[in-house]
Image (spheres, rainbow, N blue to C red):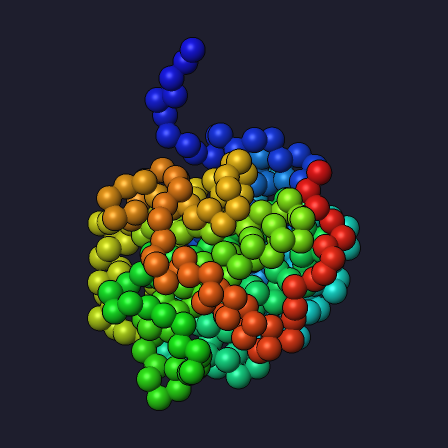
Length: 305
């Protein structure tokens, strides 16, 4: 009997030959690191990106089988177009794309941009692709879902009109990611599907996401933190990859195992009470269906073998 002494890393990813994955927001950062790891393990990976030219530039440096397709999560018409063009099976959908702490703005459909992109865009994409998905959906959340101030879903004002604050909006969207995962898994189980829904967060990873923060002070603090505290994008992608390939329970949440879940090797971690409330998860799902016009497909034509 042998005892494992090293912590989980990309070399532990099982052979992905014959599998197909979609990674949103794959131009750079965590998304590109995820693409590189999956393609390096043999998967065919689709980079779902808003700017195909940047996507092609990123894909050109990846070793393995990859392709680029346009997807703008802030435009539901683009989400529908991407899903309608999909044919055949899809083993793995990784909902990675996101915006963080940006100044107040709206998507093409009039939703607050962080909620509309981080949650509603992925909500619509997942449900539209679900008839093709054969293994699992991994949605990238954040430790910001439990920031001080008790983040919650502002059902009476989802766009935060008149009370917008970048961090409040981001925390709401990341809380929504976890509630979405919780309710998606419940529905998958209820429908008899063996597809699994999981979530992950990267800890503090140094990417270009922080550079778009609406506060100059926070940008400066994050720039220092990126140098002194953060792990790199490849380490930050490990929780997503762990959730994507390990045998984990549905609705599981993966993050770094270090102090404060800021950095470290991937492991199952806890979530806030607000992110664990099934009633809120169901309410958010209903509202999300109403806002996007996309519903959970019944019955599911495909399940994992």
